[in-house]
Image (cartoon, rainbow, N blue to C red):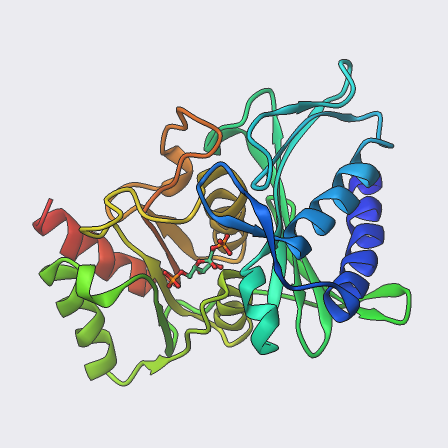
Length: 281
Ligand code: FBP
């Protein structure tokens, strides 16, 4: 596992350079979800895959930017699903973006995730590692990541990050979001999943939601390399992650690019989400 973390560190330093110097224009390609790929997405993906190919313990990888599973080493132990540069379109407006990695054993399913890592590329580059017991944050200084702190969520927070197109929210979802704001929750939403979820973790808690909507009934965020890795982080930090009703890491994966509605947060907020969604199921 340590060699995987070292590979992510090396790749992240290169991706930092790509973001700062790279071409943010669109490529001629689309990814498996139909998103037009930016040259940054493809460049970041190439950097990560090159680093992972050097590691004997990696059996397979899945990238948001590639259609199929890539076989790496047949005797490897770990399966890694990753989003090389989530929210990449935000680079053009100089907002924070991130890479997300889910590390699995045996098969690419929520139940088999054993660790997750994300890297935030913002005013500073920070890496967060969840290993099933703790959540630890590191910060990049020159060419080295230094340990900063452990991250724990409070029972209840103060921030709310309500995602997706509001005109497509179901009425009960809109009322739930409005109720949180009426309680004094503060809006914190940049459109970048990584910095938005990182902020809630560092500020002690709250709720991030990307629900089922009339235009995207199964949500937008991808299970293997967006939803499950952050669900694992939030659970390790003392919070919860659901699809509205069930623990999201128990959701079945039928295809490697499947999406899921998702709610990540402190326990109090997730309790409210489950109450509302169970009542309207
Ligand atoms: P990409 O993987 O295409 O970047 O989309 C993911 C994402 O950008 C997340 O980072 C973010 O939480 C979400 O989409 C924002 O979606 P919306 O703009 O619909 O709220």
